[in-house]
Length: 476
Ligand code: ADP
Ligand code: MG
Image (cartoon, rainbow, N blue to C red; front, top):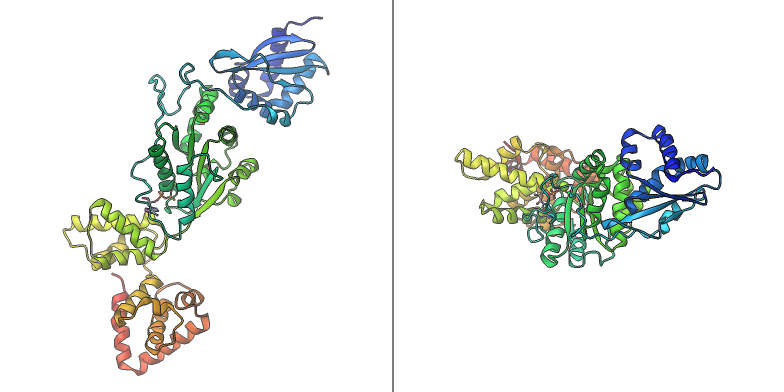
């Protein structure tokens, strides 16, 4: 009973067809060619290393069963992997059924010689038909390091990014994962790294892509049976920057392919830069093996910038755009908008637009109205910082003293007034007000509020101070 190898494979295919989706069959099984059957070993030819790994990972138990059914308990399957340029590998990876498992795969070299000149690889960024192989980096030149303001909020991420840009793939920061809330500069920093690398090493292939785009390209590749090309394309990069990886959560297939691409690049000392809106430990719906790889390099976070950094960012932005505005307006914006940099920039732009549309000068009043009406998510509430600033300006005291622990009389009084307004005009807790005002506890803040209330009723000079300050502080 000598079965012909193509007959055997046909029998296998019949079973496979019943067990996988039509799409999967088309993508993963139709391209396979049986080559020989010797000593109960069926050799099949697969188009690439990646293809082989995918089969091993997703269909190993199915294949195992089928081979046993068709060839008996001694039956084995061997893969012959076509290298690029259709060179058949004469030492095919042997996968000894039924002992085959993932471990065998791990030991196999994951090298894929890529010769761009001769094997056209579909670039998922390019519409089919328009063949063009020089790879666009998709970097936005405006997001450079030069205009990325350094502050305590971003020092680690920025300097790690800079180190990576100077030595892509050659630092311990691989992958470099930059994480932080919306509008804190992740995308900006990711581009800055890519731009810097392109400047220093023009010959390196750098690619920036959002996870969303990556996912869509992958879905298209599955539809068009070009998953191989897709993987190869990404594996060609010297520097791969993927923005917002949290988007891959729950997308198992996309994570799978990303895992392969990641491994290939990492093993070849290629640089990977990732951004995410949360740290790896909080990423839900992400495969453990990916998460553990994310932690191989450095995870650096971006925090909300402090006041000085916010002012510096606004100044830089204004300088870059050739805008001028009074310093008190700038400070007001920086004091009022504390959530993130994107909103800060949004406020600046709205303000400029308002002033030119209505032909009004940019002044504090306009800024107050604008903050009130146009900046979304910013409550009408003034910030403790702003209250402190207004109080200090009014009494002509340096703000550092108010925030210090000093017990000098006039400082104590100003500090109590600031606490009083903070309690009255913000939703901050007593404890947090205290922390802002010289590291006092909640009881001190409470005491301050009582003292101010008493003085307000008994001292008419004091009442005047409060009235003036209240006017300055109230917005609109
Ligand atoms: P994310 O990707 O974290 O949501 P972005 O990178 O898109 O945030 O940043 C939002 C805006 O804030 C961008 O216009 C960016 O240029 C600006 N920005 C953020 N951080 C800084 C910074 N440190 N210096 C200058 N501009 C910044
Ligand atoms: Mg972003």
